[in-house]
Amino acid sequence: MDPVLFPLAPAGAQRETVAYSTDVLQAYGGSEQRIQRRGVQDLSLGFRYVADGAAEAPLALRLLDADPETGYLVPWWPYATPLGAAAALGASRLTVDLADVPTFAQGGERLFLLWASATSWEQVTAAAVDGSGVDLAAPLAAGWRARTALLPLLRAYPTERMGADRLNPALRMGDVTFRADLLDAAALPAGSELYLPAGYLGLDVLTGLWDGGGPQKQDYVRRTTFVTAEAGAAVYDSQDALGGLTRDLLFKLEGRSEVAALRRFHAARLGALKPFWLPTWDQDLTLAAPASQGAGAIDVLSSEVDGYHVLGFPVGYARRHLQLWTWGHEPVYLEVGGVEYQGEGVCTLELLGTLPEAITTAWRVSFLRHTRLADDALELDWAHPGYAAATLRTLELASDCPTGAA
Image 1: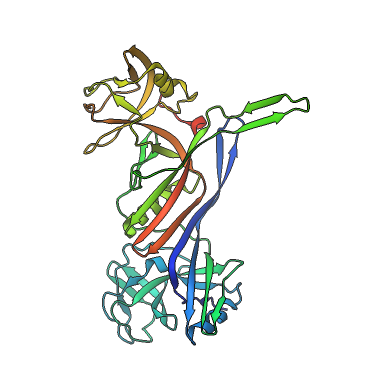
Image 2: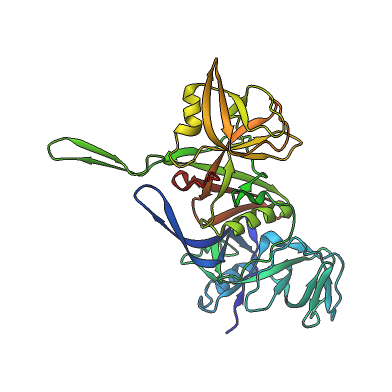
């Protein structure tokens, strides 16, 4: 049997979850091995529908009573796109701009839905998609006005619980979540990136597009064992002396281009599999004096204690990596090879490399943290098709931090 179309629209916000699958094997000292279990994305869509009226309320029950093994065709509501021109009965092409809509191939077909309401729609199959429209595999069975919504369709299956609350005989509502078939690698729209590929020591560097001005949840995480013996003596075993910082990054995404940039960053990570550099973007250290192009050291306002924070805290180079940045210049990435306290609140940081350009005291000195995503999932909360928010939880990998030192 063919999948059942679910044409009931969301009554408000929607949550979209894109996930990979990674096994993380952590050693006693905190170092990790990560194994990819699934290299293609798993996508789920969740929303609340409202079926209002003598036609829609019974329709909701019929849809939810369908055989779950048959599956559903679910419109990808965040990517509803209006037709650029009317389409007449029998037309074989739709005028519509789908340049910013991701492409997921399921079974080699691209299915779309022309949607005016839960009871007024037409399912179509694309023969080809280009920058200005969609060529159809068969002529339209009805005519459609300009601005009619065109939505990609995903083959999906229902979760265990599907809401069907009865408010009155002609009004039903419920929360539903659909999980799509395992999807091939996404063909994501091109655009500006929020990360620099292989930007430093062969790893990507996250560079922007997040709400860094607001509060952030951050926690230091260490693997420990605390044992109290029968005699009352206590033993504290710090398995991971370095620990790592978890940090929640909130992304406020305006427009599909910014959503696509976050999707590409998540896809490049393959979930929790691939680490990257996460700048603190804070003024962790303050330059004490300008430095010229080609300089192999910089002076920062600091103390012996702060010098220890740069070089002595991490066994394994976890805080030796710096990002120097200011507005209007490309960031400079450097590794500290040594620290010498000069007295009077000044430390000299000896660099493994030289400055590519002269810097002034207006430049900010941030730490780079060797980081991965704390889990495989990217959750997008869509307020409407033009705005979404997402939070990525990151985990510092201090024990595995690479170095450029010989």
